[in-house]
Image 1 (tube, rainbow, N blue to C red):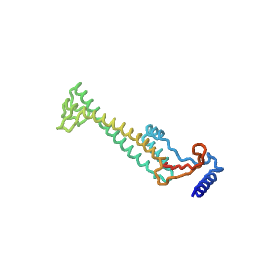
Image 2: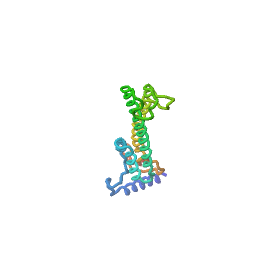
Image 3: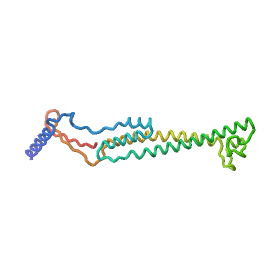
Image 4: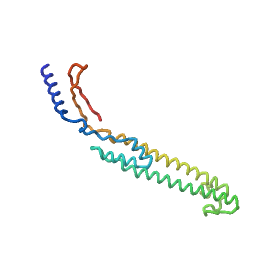
Length: 199
């Protein structure tokens, strides 16, 4: 039994030396390392560009599904919707304010838009349920909400690009590797080192 153990040890030792003999450390291909900070920076500068950078990274790694590109239309859809509703509410807030200032100066009715016909000066600010007009206060509040929503969608795209970049070079395949290396135990006795990689 002891002879078989020593024979196995010598065979494994010889196989490891034969496998690594003559191989330069620079010629061993290194796995692709994806830059996570760059993905977040790209997405912070131009929305969606971090997701495109992650998609390019996915294509460099074998056995990875390409799955980052489809997020870009969702990001631009969210930013576009927030931008549109910001513009509409800002427009009506400004029109309501201008109408109120004109009426305050000239006491004229509906100077800017037919939608303001029949509304009092107080209704231009607070709104009127009868005319189905919400007034300057509500338009300005909605405008501010969509400003923060625009910033929030942009910020979420940066966070998503950074988190997804962690998974580009993370190997979740079932192909685990077990390697044996010759080593010295305690600096004096020969032995075998086992290394299990979960990359």
